[in-house]
Length: 403
Image (cartoon, rainbow, N blue to C red):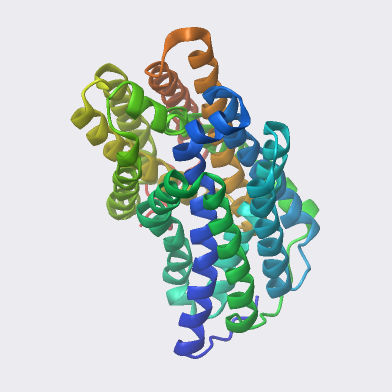
């Protein structure tokens, strides 16, 4: 990327445009969970079957993130962002129009394809517009769109779906995608590609044991949260006795937990990436167990959702930084694979949660599935930490990224 910073006004406008796309992605990824009962009712399927749409979206991310990043490694970044968000808008428009469950799942898969590539490339483009010492801040401000989506966008889309039907939520997201295309075309300057690493070189770097273990820990451990969150709407209405009209507020509580977790995770990760990762997994397992045990008490269930959001942000932040530390020579593909790993967790959690519900174990059961996934993720990240300490002279201290 070009390393010449632009004016402050151009930078702010460009970051705002890119953040709108992140906001749209956050809304479409999480709003489906709050709309599942309505989607199931209209398409004539069960809620667990409707939950397959969550898995299809996540699989789209898993497939699209590394594939698009590798194929388009030398493509103009601005043009690529425009194409990605155009595909995103079309996928959500198709979701709105889908007449059957099968076509709806396909549309969700297409909607997920540009997710990881857009977020990864958008953050890198934002970083290229500022001096080196401000690049972390630039990347975080693009990602802020995801956080704001969970506080305001997802609850609003869910409320809109309750008022006008679930298809209106995807109409909103498609409109946000079109708006992003327009804003990126106007606001984001063209950036020049430097000497990008070859796809072969990045694939070789990404195959390191520490990177594989970190991605595996995220793919499994973060699935615990999705096992619960995918079915949060029917769980809160059927078990906790929360009225359907209050579900948007419940989703906002989770979004606030994610935001609080992001603020907490930063200082913790600066002190120790490893302790933050293991601590996040342990906290997530404990809170999911509390959610499963006390779902019937609405106040406790809502507090648990807030804490699940905090634990989730701790896990994602710690694993992102760990991946960055271990894959400094494969930045593009590692960023894409990071998003792919967390969305694989999305697919896995939604699928396993649906299985136990379909088996007749009730809406509490996904929480216990989540506990198992968190503990499995904890085992994987612990193995990674032990191997790193045994094989690196620097492993007992903090790396340059950790300090």
